[in-house]
Image (tube, rainbow, N blue to C red; front, top):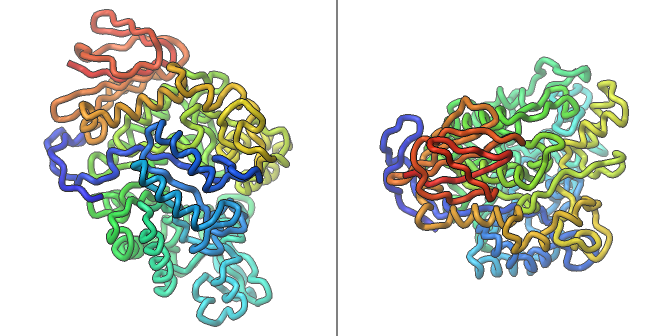
Length: 575
């Protein structure tokens, strides 16, 4: 899986020819995230499973993806949909067996595909053997696997959990309390304890020995706490402070991440992509440079737009200009020091087309434009299940329809802020993680063809119009447009430019237009997206050699300008 040093590259920060990045086996690939519980149910119990994924491997091969990231399928009580792991060495029976997992790895490999699992090691489940032993003997060996404190001394700090409320919870049957940055059923592991780290590395290597290609690494920035623990200024009436305040004071996470890389990933040439929101200025190269802790990390800059410290109920809609500047800002920040993993949605976000396109203007042309704009950025593109057919947000008529614990917490925050139940539901519903977790829409039959039983989460009613069966083979569909983007990325004539070429913004000041060059050593591609429903004129920088991708039939070149229709997207090879 290894590669040598690549040839010279135009650095988009200096314009100089540089030889700065090693060529790796994963860089020319396309990745696809599977949320197993909602992907495909093979046995009619309403829950997606590993045999269901195996059944759909030929579909994924048809789409053209190479790397498959599976959200957690480990044994779990599913308090946070598998991100609360009770046994890192077992597959949860709801998803299948270890034999199924072995077969998935084998079947994927036979199709030239690689499997990633979710690595969740900031916390485990309160039903894990380690936590049970800590409850039985808080002063013993396993008490030091977690962050414990005496209840009589009060809370050691005023940090707020990501899901609301204090990070401190009484340890049942004891006079202790434990720390949880996420749900109370997700106690944080004490990474300061070398024994904890050794156990984690042993498990990582066990999975890599089974044939995994690597991991997506969950919430990893949280493993390093600011010690000694202390209060920070409260940012809400609850007297607590957001967790990112603490993270900004934490120092020394690199020691943990470097050790983990050297003890595990590096030995197997594994691909790793980090979920990192809070790296400090100047740290990016340490995370994903040639000698980085990870192969890549997600570019979440676009997803931070419009967020409000008061809660998701106060978030603002994203504008085309904000989206453009977030993308370009991220690309300028990373230059060619490493590879971002790009995305418009995942299991923790609403559907990208509903979030980034203006409300009431979501259409197939806009979905394709958004797809093309992010896909052609420099980096490794990730597609989330259903994104390739343009799945949209679902409307909730009651909070009782919401399964997600984070959305329920945000709903309560909105009520506490004075919103009515109707206002609160409408506000948090737009950003709910359940939007991305509704069943995959395979066809227009009952329950979208996801299950023969009752689905664990209600399907989006629009499955009758938006589904795989309708779009496969239909030339103008969103699905076929994604396939064209993937084909271009794999095309030997353009691959070096698309994968490794520099990115340079073009006509950055033109409103609701996102355009940029991808420049290789001997080739220039121009990517243009008209980010609005109205047509606009775009000045061309030179002669067009080929129109490689166009999401609409029209192409009106008039001398040095082109008339771009609403939501039109093109990739041009320039003379």
